[in-house]
Length: 193
Image (cartoon, one colour):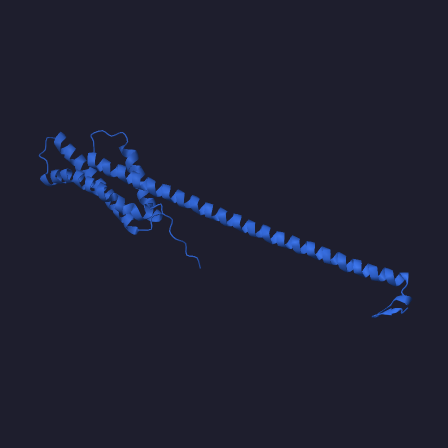
């Protein structure tokens, strides 16, 4: 019987050599198993990290949507206050308990509009509406004072007083076009780059 089989001499193989070989094989096997488990853990950590990234991305999208909704709401309020102000110019009743609040609200929204709207024409037009409203109130107050004092009305002032409602109604018809771009609820396409 031959004691040599390849590079191992089995006749000279003792328990110490066997235990060294077995320990080495067990260490290699253990290291391989631990390495595979660590690779699995690393993969799961990468998956978790990817899921966290997706969640963060969705949270960012949600925050952007909330900001767009808030901005839309503020812009819509400006549109509504402007509409009320233009109707106020049309009517200019003798007594209007809400007039001061309506004028104050419009003045506030007019000033905000320069920062809320992408189109500078919105602010410019609102300033024009403000000036027209002030002129209408002034002409009306002067006409009422002249009438109460029995003075003859100024024909130019009367003509302007009659023109304010027509101007206001015409402006109300075109008002949605002024606000249309910034009141669109369509989400602009994202530039993916």
